[in-house]
Amino acid sequence: MFDARRRPSGLSFLALFIAAIILILPLVAMVWSSITTPRGDVYLDAYVQVFQAPQFAQTFFFSLRSALITIALSALLVVPTAYWVQLRMPRMRPVIEFLTVVPLVIPSLLMTFGLIRVFNNTPLTNSSDGLYVMLIGAYVIISFPFMYRSVDAGMQAINVRLLTEAAQSLGASWFTILVRIIFPNLLVSVLNGSFITFAIVLGEFTVASLLNQPAFSPYMLDLSSRQGDQATALGIVTFVLTWLCIAAIERLGRGRAKISPVGGR
Image (cartoon, rainbow, N blue to C red; front, side, top):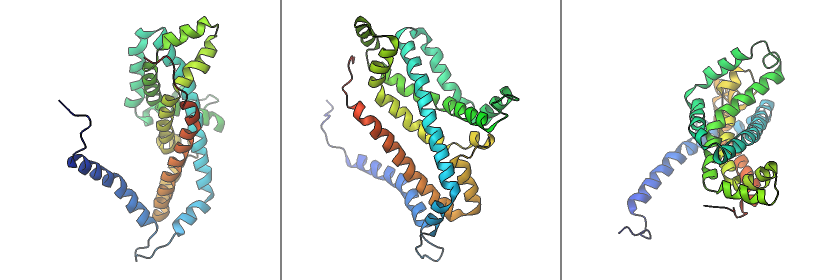
């Protein structure tokens, strides 16, 4: 029989080592190219210029704010939907799962042109605020598959019907059940979906460019066409800031996530 306590073989360590090299080597190369000149001299001017550029802070915090708004709206949309499908409408699961696939197969370019066409000559396309609302809506659509799959997996791990019936027997309203019982049990799943959503929004280019929004990715592309060394330094800074933001989101939910979920299967 298979011994689960058997130590990993040398082949496993070799595969892990190769994977680490594939992931780390490009980052090391980017860091090295951003701090050296063609002659091999070490300098940090590229990083100084990146942080001194006013467009850096403007575009980064624009995308950061958009990512947080997208995460909040996605959670408000997905958690009640997944809960109601699990509790009252299990036959609708294939339909919802099909809808989660649609944003993956429709290109962002086509979706953006479709939104512009549908909402043409409306407040959504005739003002900067309207275009920003359209941008957030597009981000919610793009992130929907990832957030829903994560939340649905968490929903399958808890006994939704038992939790609901127990709360109703104590006189809890639907709002109380959803906010104080279901959502805390799904916090880890929501955070997992939030990480993916955050990375998608911060790196999204097509929608932001077509809607003429001052997002971070279009700024990176524009900088790379003018200053290659600064673009490389900006890529490293973006990588670090992204992980710091993800760590902050994870730490924000760690306290509540430590609460032991009830009603598990």
